[in-house]
Length: 509
Ligand code: FAD
Image 1: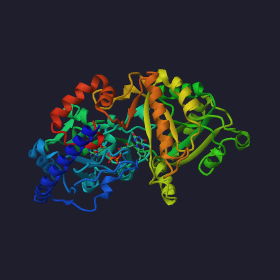
Image 2: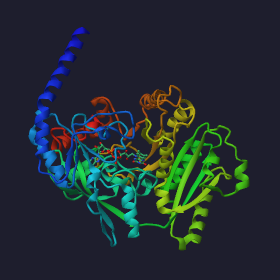
Image 3: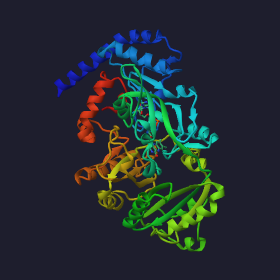
Image 4: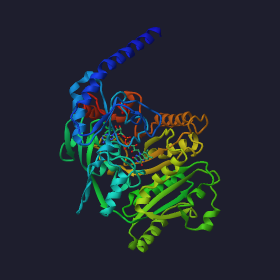
């Protein structure tokens, strides 16, 4: 034990000495780089924070690039310093990672939002698309797109995330069953590799890099530009919620809806465990179709499953759309009295989480720890999963929403880096918990982390074939198991595009 301790102290002192010796050289070399933007070497705390609010690694510097060439020059400089420098680079989108994935301990963080200035270019025609900066926020693309009557097809539930950040993961929401995740809706990328090369890539040109970067957790290159597929934007959205007490009926309806062509444009769902008075919370935005019947409905602390649907339309199609919705809803098996409907402009529907963000921020409840857990569960195992997790492990859903909805694997491209279960349909189950700082109760961080651990352990022991989304692991063995048969492709791509492992060190792969 003593030997081990002395050895660790020796190793740590050597690292400290090395950093201290190299430090002035690195700093002065960065200062002389010919770039249009600038480096910050002080007040770097912002770059050591993220939405998860649990991990904090201070970088050496933050680059605010003005151009793609600023990023390429910086990465190339580090690449040319060779393996001895140990310097790493993390692209930081909007910093909405959960466990420090966009941070770089003692390295360089690139503030991708500085690149936002690059003008969005809309191409209008039969197959419209937009060219955007990798640091662009999806909400800005929506706002600009609406001026042309266009919008991306596939979204995340929250739009204040960057293009580069979500394309490095997948970008999943209620439209994914039809259009695939956001990574299935990109035609072309411009990428800066770990050698500092600027490469344009697509399904036809440098396709291995293109597919590698999509869902690639920032490991193979920094996305500086993306060409995103668009469709005509609708004006309005019918937003519908219906409730179930029986899980099997709930998922049967969800799966039926995602297999049909002309039903809804968005299919999600969530779980409600041991909550009373919930429907009162919805009343401000959702109207019960039959107020008298709805007022008689009592949840009585039962576990409920809420199916959430949306249908897009233009105002002049209201009558037709109402008939279509009526017909689609008549095929469902929800509790009849629990049909709740809302009608909102398209932008309000897509930007819905931001409205909650504003409310939570005003109460100081946004910048709290977020021990989120996102899982992709194969369809054949979702009942076993639900029985144990919603029936035994979780006692209530008061720490945050639990989303659950299926997607079609046929809409995902298996050449990309993202790892999904091996079945035609799989579910996203997202435990979106917020912890009350310094609480030691059931709303505290420790309790929620233990619950997450129990869920993961159950999936492992029951061999459910579950994959983590926004994955986070502590050992390389776990990463290997995550990638499974795709580990070799991952290693080959890493050695081709980022052989010195400079990029996205916060993923800890
Ligand atoms: P960051 O957190 O800054 O970066 C994420 C990772 O990508 C890091 O490793 C970073 O180094 C790397 N990276 C960042 N920019 C680039 C780039 N240009 N090139 C290469 N690598 C880059 N996800 C969904 O799929 N669906 C959802 O519905 C959804 N809802 C969310 C709601 C909220 C409130 C939050 C906070 C997150 C949500 N997410 C969702 C997760 C989101 O996709 C991830 O947090 C993702 O990390 C995007 O955040 P960001 O743009 O801030 O990227």
